[in-house]
Length: 447
Image 1 (tube, one colour):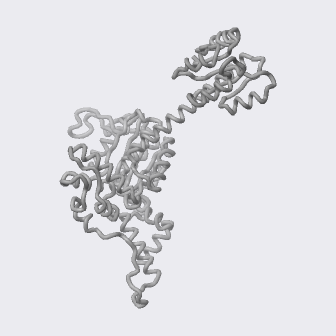
Image 2 (tube, rainbow, N blue to C red):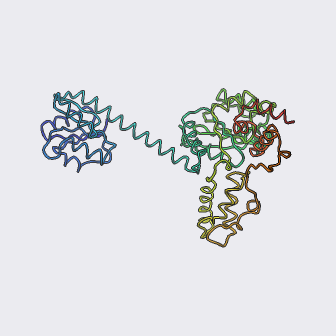
Image 3 (spheres, rainbow, N blue to C red):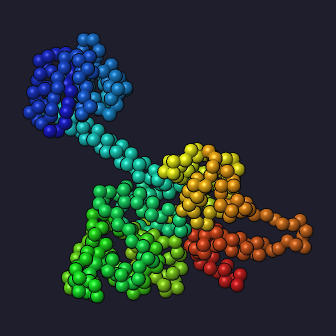
């Protein structure tokens, strides 16, 4: 069936003729001799309306206006008298998708209908995808500019099937980003398989990734499929990729290049079809320069890059996240905690959050568990947060003899930025507005 069509014409013979001709060409057609009847018969699965303009009672122009108000998703094709340009313009202004002049050619009507129905279906698909994008990034809470940009980037990157490298500090939410990329991508129904490259010894990690044949090593009593194959049709998330042992890096590179993997102790290669998303809190660029990570593997996994901002760079998002964690913890623990006191909110805003979102979640869970109030107070927060000073830059003295040269101020600021990003030189260079070579040169000058 090409689509469900409603035909409206007060000329019963013309109405029946159109119904018959369109049905022969694969349409499911309902025919009505008045606009009022047509409006009463509108169904949720309607794909298009074909209407004459001149009709008794409600005419075609008024029908267009009603449909644009009630069912803006349904395209309307208007049939006008030959040469009546004014009527055609009025129909378009009233919301008609297209118009045809009399005498009517059925094949032309069929062509216009097919185009209108395809346009509607594409519009519905765009709406569906946009709704899915919004749903898929709901977990990434925040209204800061950094988070809005992150959500927009995730939506763009997810459309590609190329490898993605997610970078950010520990606890910033890299796995949440990876899961959002999976849900928004072309394989949301496939598996999302995560492996932490720092959590297993080298020989076990190799077996986890590539699988093994029976008898490949002690205790290998049966063959096992590796995670690269197991993630087929979905996403393999390689967390802490910087910790991948150097000896395994060329094997992973070969697998990613060939899209085939050879199990440990096996003789035959097995194809796999999984999108690769990697993550690290390390400076991979520096690791490559220092020989701790293969450059060719780096280029293979760093096709698209998503940087997750640290919590301290997200302003009042701290409070949005805190409220979200508070509601979840209060519900789970059965406590009547409903919000934050002004003092507690101030302390949360002023703290530097070196552990990022994960630290904030743990802090709120602890506070909710211990409080006896309906709001979290300053005394409910961990001591490190209660006593933390505000982070700010000060000129400590007005005495010229105590002031220092600009170069010293620059060196101190660079050191402060490096400390705040955990030594990640690539991220520090981006924050400072420098390229990495310039940053390395300034660091050498400070030695």
